[in-house]
Image (cartoon, rainbow, N blue to C red):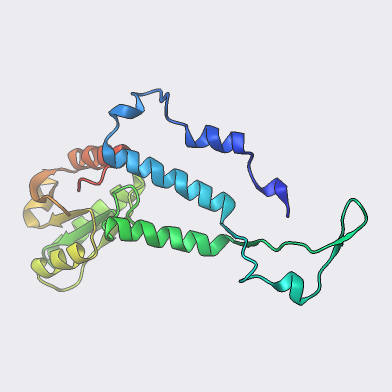
Length: 212
């Protein structure tokens, strides 16, 4: 076994206990969702380092099957022990557990599509593309639904895909340079300026909460 790939127990204890003295507010004052997110990230780090290590003579009898031996320090022949380590399978299981935990409704900071742009008519498509470019510049993961469908169908599809935020864009929003916000959990939140939405979205993403 290559022990160099494994961190020391001391370094792992330091990592898992990190956050006890956070600079901006104590860990006890963080939201429950934030605490959960921190725990998931730490668990992911552990899985990434260790993977799955199995030691089971019934499942892995290869050393005996192949009659593997090595010379011990006293010169005697010994049977080696096989340790099975699966890195990528562990990552897949971790992602599966996380998706199941959130029911597919991942927090804003983790969602593959954070905001869906839903133009009401084709006339709003140009305005939607402007919003898309601005959000993309700010680092948000955005998708635009410019299909020739009714706005109700677009909202339903975005809800089924569990997109955290939906921006409804029509003639009025394009004229007033605003966005009509709809959140995954809260529903219709009314029309606000794009800057106000960006501040709200950045605050939600920074808090690691799952309130939308």
